[in-house]
Length: 242
Image 1 (cartoon, rainbow, N blue to C red):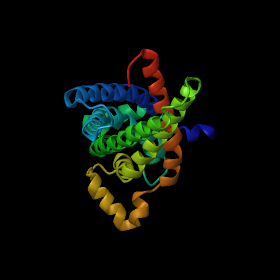
Image 2 (cartoon, one colour; image 1 turned 180 degrees about the vertical axis):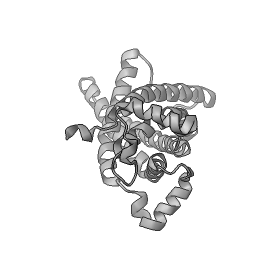
Image 3 (cartoon, helix red, strand yellow; image 1 turned 45 degrees about the vertical axis):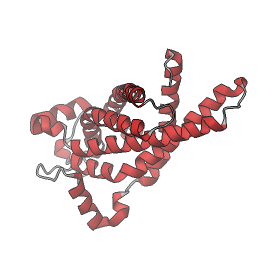
């Protein structure tokens, strides 16, 4: 059924909406503060990297519970992961049952992996995005005013898309470990992403650590391009200098 393809989507949509607005807000403010202190104008790694890593670290606390619910909804009833006896009727039901059986620490299971993925991944994402964007604008600085809007759209699509590919190419193994930690029914299963990855590598090699790379990269370019174009458009509408 088509419905099965979107299982767990509700918690993901809620988390992504709140996470995106919070993330871009924190990044913009942190970046502005560091630029003023360092008197930086162009892409500066001493500004971009810490701003993005700090922002990613903060939003990991929002993403961890929503992604845990999403992952458990998606794998329930598959036999090898979440058994049929643990079937959840909705995302709210999943969250409440997790809190009831595992406590607050249970809803934040996989927190370390999410923290590492978001802080490191977003630092890489914005380093690529800001530098590609800066380079492309230099190449297109002579573009006529009639085509400036179209040029900005193209820059946003390419820089955002490449940033998304860089993000997932860097941290996909951590995400694989996170998913395994969040969906394993064993309460004593390791929550250390490095130990989990060590086990995955021993059993399936590097290919196991990068399971799902193709679909992830295929999704990363359009999804991140759309996010960046939307963010830049919002900044322009609100009159905020980027």
